[in-house]
Length: 309
Ligand code: 8YV
Image (tube, rainbow, N blue to C red; front, side, top):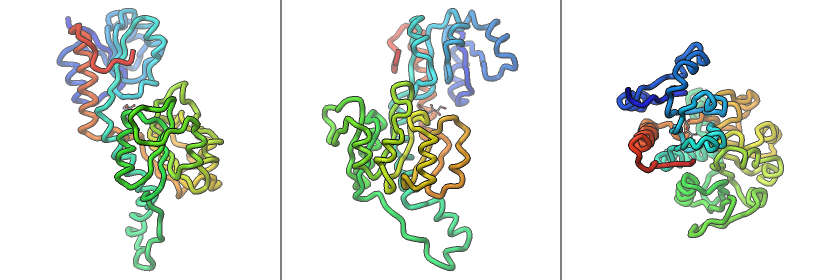
């Protein structure tokens, strides 16, 4: 029998097909009684493909050796619990950088030029009565990038193409980057017109975009969150969007997805997006292929392609 792999969440069909072709796959997400199912197959599982993996699940899989995560962010995996059992963990970096950067610019333009409102304006026949009001633009503005990693750098270069000035905040200054570095997030927010959040989620960044940072961004500043809802203090952000404490926000991620704070639905200065940064066919195919390539490398005894643990 081939190696047994647990698929925790529904994956892309092409990815599930590739796992089926090389492994005996067990689908946790299809089970009506997951506990009984895990009791039966748990002792045989050697790898997990997919999403949320907590310490409790790891505890039910005594032969687990490897977790191949679908996603570059792995805050959904309890890496401490994995490390404690010498379980390897991989993610899917790099292949989604361009899709992420592309939609970030799209959301920024959409928010600045109010594209959803402009579309409604035409459909509702309002253009026949009066021109659409003048909007702001990105050109000449300063964008502060929170987290100049692989995706952050792709966003930065596209912001340069929009003739923006790019600065960044991160844990440390990076060598060989042409952008001004801030070691204090609030200082950068004060100097920026746009704050683009693209830092990993997890304990290290929980709530770092807090009231002080949003106040520094101020009534003319725009927030864009492409990272994780946890990075921003969501209730404070909602409050400041309602009161005009910040000018607006484009949000692809939320604290309790797919639940979005209802207060945001009433706000005209917010552009909402359903966590779709990497959600193009070509990028998701590439992510799925990397999930499988990491599994294959592990079971072939070869070095993992993109290990994080
Ligand atoms: C998700 C993401 O993985 O890669 C990440 O970290 O946030 C996304 O690409 C995707 O939503 C998984 O379904």
